[in-house]
Amino acid sequence: MAHVPAERCLGIIELLADGAREMPLGDIAERLVLPKSGAHRLLATLIDLGWAEQDRETGFYRLTMRLAVLGQRFYVASGLPDICQPVLDRFAHECREFARLAVVDGSALVWIAHAQGATGGLVYQPTETTGTVPLFATASGKAWLATLKVNDAVQLIAKQDGFSHAARYGPNVIRSIEALLKELRTTARRGYGLALNEAEPGVTAIAAAIRSGTDGATVGTVSIAGPTVRMTESRVRELAPLVTQCATELSTSWPVRPKAMALPRDVLRRGRRALVTTMPRFERAMRSSRS
Figure (cartoon, rainbow, N blue to C red):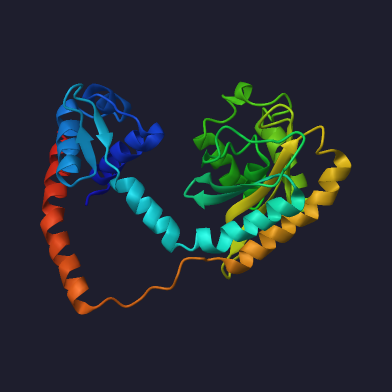
């Protein structure tokens, strides 16, 4: 696959996956800066291969459940539910607050699992428990950025449109790169990220980075969050060691993905035949999308 056409095809999948939306051809072409004819051919290929479908009444396009099924299959096979969820459940119970696990996904940090540890009184439960983490506004984002080189951290913030959406968050949210870099130095020094009325008004969160491999690369974060009235300064000092301890425990389990297994020759032959059959259709659609 040529790089640009492949990027366009994946761009359609990512666009339709965002919010599980349905979109007309014109909107898809406009959002991805594609000619309508090229977008139509790519969509036709995705439909032919079972990744997308078109509503008969509206003509709008949407993804099939194939992506969700594959994602769920990969999630289970990765070992995250079996290995990480019990750790997260125990962590939330010990802290008696809401816990979340996020993983690094390219240039983003994405929440993928959570556990509720609060059993009474004020209970913090965010409306969204999955999705992309706002890096500059959250303890999780700071915990990850603090492990990176300064230039890399700045580029990641730029990819999320900088601080242009700061008004969406709490009153104490960081609003400049200078303030963020200062906060990241503090985060690296103390070993955990802290967000006080930043991601959301009235909410305090603590997060630590999960590392893996011989180079100690950051693969995710684990965090705890609760109402600020309960998450006082002394409570933060009490919980911070539990957060870093949980991150260390998860780090020892990473990578959770099982080792590759040798496949039988007949399976490999079937896979090669399927690839030979499928690839020409993708290549033809992608070449024509350039026009």
